[in-house]
Length: 412
Image (spheres, rainbow, N blue to C red):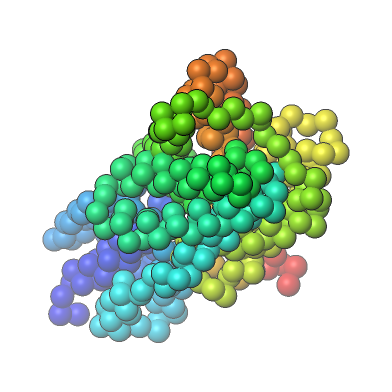
């Protein structure tokens, strides 16, 4: 071996690609060790945070800041598969280097696919949260325009905080405009659907998983990043209400969450859950061959959410906990069966359960000076968030060291 540090450099590059594209900390560390160990490096030490990697070895030391960005889960899948092929002895160092360069150069989903996914996802989640078919059309338009703005303006010209606030403001103003000209029945549901593409599903889910793996620093950082994004969305919504009030002289009075009878049936709800989950799979860069799996995962979770909430005496938090646990179990089974990181299915599958409505209603109640109601809706959203966290943690703890995967292999 001409360069004894080459294996560590390549392991480091694989870890960097994983970390900056939405992988959890434990996967990054495991992949780096797997690659280094295969090429005979036994004295390595890797320390991974949510925004950086430090690596040491014999005559080797390297660290790099890796900023928190969006997700491109197709790269996570590609590096995960590559590391397993390396263990099988299928790559020389030169071939591995070439393959990693190819993965880093992988292009994002085409703009038209992302814009369509945002539009369809907004429309689907508008229905999930009780909107009518007319509201669905309005959310579709708002979600489409929002993602055009995020792709071609926000990500190129603005910081993450400003772009998120601006996105929430734009989506809400678009809904105001359509509502005032008569397109849409329930403004609240229109707005909830429109802002859903801004929800930080990757940071939120990976923060919980990092905490489960006892990576407390990384988990706390990612959860704080998710909470900051939630706050920025709420601020954008609040600014839109203030702007509309100043223009028209009075604030629109909303009557609370409304469920349209035409869209509240199980069939429509489950179709919406499937389409919404698949849409976010596209936004998160999931490989297309896993779209169906992700959609099934989200649909199963939403089916049981509807059953638990409509036919049991469970509290909303208990319903979310049970539905989240089921989504996590489904994602684990899919991950084992498809030999793919669980992140691909879990992040998309829990999306119907994320308290997007709570973010909206908290913002509205604050702006309309209904502080008591704001505390109630905010606390309700917090309880749902905690329930999601514990639902994921419970199943991941049950799985332990791959118990579910080992059980499936025995069954085969």
